[in-house]
Length: 87
Image (cartoon, rainbow, N blue to C red; front, side, top):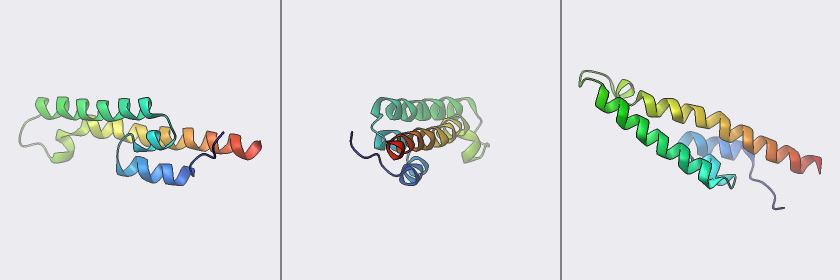
C-alpha cells in the first residue's frame, strides 16, 4: 500500500478546486462526481435567480456542494493517514 497524501495538503486542494482533494486521495470517481454536481447546481441556481442577485447568490447551489466536499475529502484523507500510522 502506497503512503497516503498528507491530509492537510488534501484539505488545501479541496478548498482550491472542487473534487481535487478526492482525486488526490485516489478516489477519482467521487471527486469527479463532486465536481459535476458543483457545476450542475451552480447552473441550476444561476438559471433560477434574477440578475439582481449577487454572484454568491447566483451560484449558491454549487458553492454549497463545494463546501460539503471539503470536510469529506479531509475526513477520508485523515482516515487513510491514520490507518497507515496504525500499521
